[in-house]
Length: 268
Ligand SMILES: [Zn+2]
Image 1 (tube, rainbow, N blue to C red):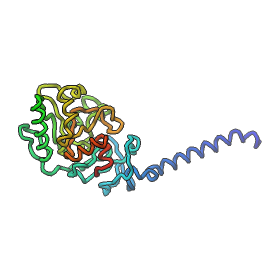
Image 2 (image 1 turned 180 degrees about the horizontal axis):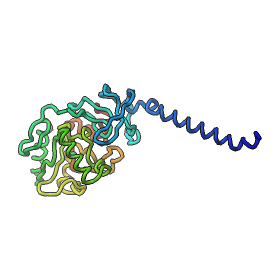
Image 3 (image 1 turned 90 degrees about the vertical axis):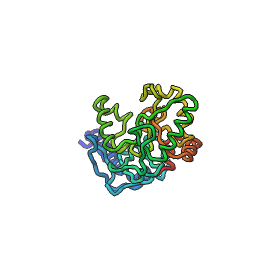
Image 4 (image 1 turned 180 degrees about the vertical axis):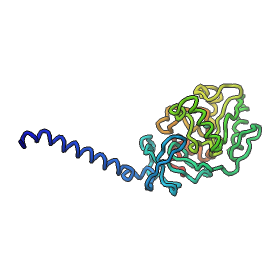
């Protein structure tokens, strides 16, 4: 009897052991990988814009990554951090780190000559300087979209979801609070009289000039081509973020894209 049962029982025991082993391993995953986002408090689940996110308890305002994380897999744990460092030019805002809904940047000003477009004053000044430099080379740049409040983001994101579907919308539009546009330092730039929001912009004289020169004025391309696995967003040749001239120069020198640079040197 025993000899007959053994071939059946042995695989069963191994299977049960494997299931329990896997369960305990993944339960401890956040602790074993705490370096990713530092020590996180017990997570709570919240519903944000009809999409489930797991975010740390409310008191976890800013958590520092100690490791040098460059791969998308390393930043995949479904933990969302809300940062209170929005006023810092080097704050990292991405698919896992967001601003509070009520965050409004300091020193927002209307960009002269562009009614309805606001940026933080330092970014606005450098943007106009950059536009003037481009104009000297016969290129007419314009603002397509600048600062977006939380409510504007809600409207923008929802309208994209309605027209493109959630999955597609997420590849190019941020959930409210996760948008660099809420910082008042991000700007979508277009060429006067030409179509924008297409990859083709990167191949226009204006797009090429911006890619090559924006850093001299403190602006960086947030979502470069071929870096989707790192940024979480598809290529956006029109979307630039101001981090200051010295920082932008340092970023270029380091060979990193903005996401990598801010993971290493930014705050959140
Ligand atoms: Zn943008």
